[in-house]
Length: 268
Ligand code: RP5
Image 1 (spheres, rainbow, N blue to C red):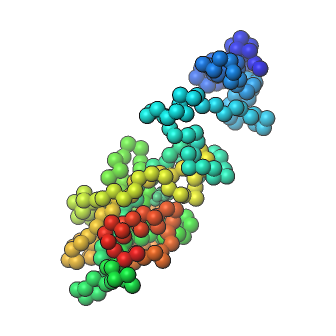
Image 2 (tube, rainbow, N blue to C red):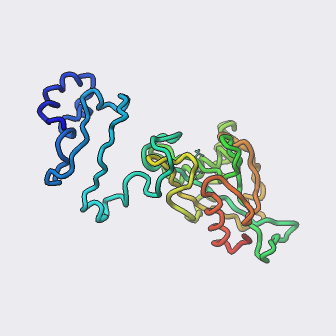
Image 3 (tube, rainbow, N blue to C red):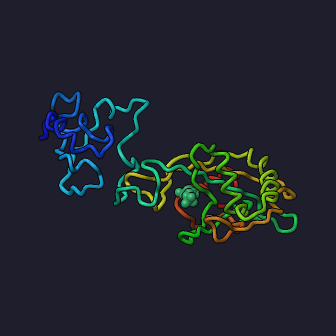
């Protein structure tokens, strides 16, 4: 065990680290308030930085009993509470812990002539705006990451404009006009899901969470029946997709779509 005084004495050798990262007080000895029963693993000065290889580093896992008891401010468990994923680190995700996204599920009824088309269940068929992801080729809801400081409501509209209408390549005027047209429609959404996503980028330490909203057009003469879909940004294709139990989508998107079908009493 490294004694605290030796660490303090050798702090000069850590001068290239900032004072916060020296780990003088939070290294060596026992974890506080454990009656000296929970020792820290030994960490030499030159192994403090994560970039220093240290294959023998096997620290004890410890969470205080009062935290495990689940007070309101505490997370339910350490790391990815949804279980092991088989890989640590952040993978392709930028943030440790939850990486927040938003998914706009834009729906309308399938019509032929003036009639709503029904499925084998006898229920009307819903369609949603579905994009094909450029990274893996899977079909998906046109969702995306919530930018720092951005409201989820803004992300939902922005991602839809970028991926399903290719707003990034519109003139400023066209973009403003399209955004204005959709703004009111995007005000009347219904939350369908909020939480963890079974995304293939998840690791034990970083994972996707989303808020999915359904924006539904009931009126056959309404905005969504004349929308000019055009894939853009992370999407390589876009289409109106009939909703049924046959669909196969990226991550947990099929579950969100099923919920929408149930909420709208539509064919599934
Ligand atoms: C999924 O990844 C979310 O449900 C959302 O659709 C998407 C966000 O990531 P990017 O499309 O920005 O890669 O987990």
